[in-house]
Length: 348
Image 1: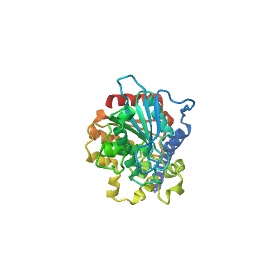
Image 2: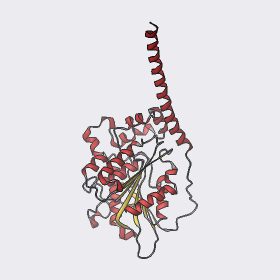
Image 3: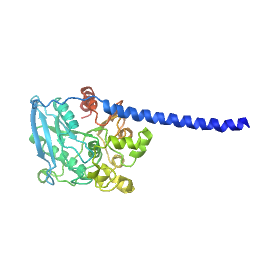
Image 4: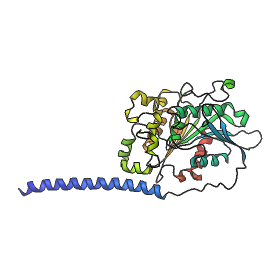
């Protein structure tokens, strides 16, 4: 009888111990992620002097549907007979915030214009103004505009790299993996003269892009980050501005992601276009922080795996950076961008 009484006690104790270990593991992961985000170092942006390394063009319109359709362009002065290659930069902001001069866009164009690239940072219609696929169509129109007007501004648009971070990462990926019959609804300025110029790009640079629309909750569960922590961390998004939709992405689509059909999800899923389209010539550089509590790093992990299967391991670089949160400044530190510059020099 004593043995019979002792066995359930041991089982109960084992269950309690296992639950305690699970709670401690989740607590450790969550605490580490929050701590990394709170203590991350900052990089100072020097606004004390204008750039004197070339010519700056601000608020160039690339389409005529909206005043939001403009870009800023920086063309470095380089040796006679040489032409700078083009790097297109797409800002993030959850599809509802941001413009062509966000902090992250500035990190990118300041570094790369000083290393001989012509840098164009694109403004596009946010979700408040135009739902999906407006932002995708805008960015592809900007690329076509830049390719058409290359001789006018003095850069080489035969081969183009495109960068995006967060929501801009999604837009950059869509620009890279969709073809010239997809998301081309916005007419670029000069199209009547230059015709249906390609929006093809050669190098994709994706910083912690929000890629997978329908599995984010499962990702947080897998990574051990409670939903309440994610909600608090992303309270910068004004819920009132979402007009009752469950998140920013849903607001952009004007339909909750959780209510979308498989067909609707496929239309906006980069993986669908990666499988469908010929991506010959494309290379990709993907980076994400493992303490990101805005976009799960599993998005980038899956994207890197899918692109590697499509393009080959020599065409895809994926880096998961320990201790980095969403849009952490050290992801734009010189030593990181030096690695990106080397990749672009090899593949662009």
